[in-house]
Image (cartoon, rainbow, N blue to C red; front, side):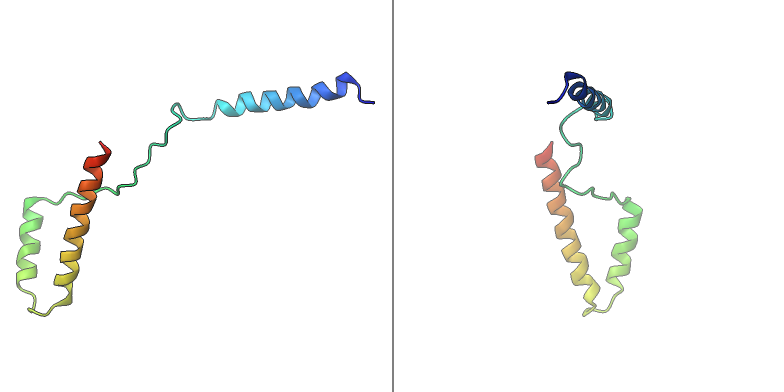
Length: 85
């Protein structure tokens, strides 16, 4: 048979550990992350420079298509971010 003294020591240790570990928990129980990645803001000067550089590219430059895809992704992220707030 087990004595009461043997059973209470592990229980006290477990309760103490739980109390100490819950102090490490963040204030809110909801996560603070967002499924929407941040959108980098570019200045008007940067946008103008990029527009000039793209205009100087050859007509069949593959990067132009990639930049169009990037613009679509940025628009989708803005919609995602607007829904979140």
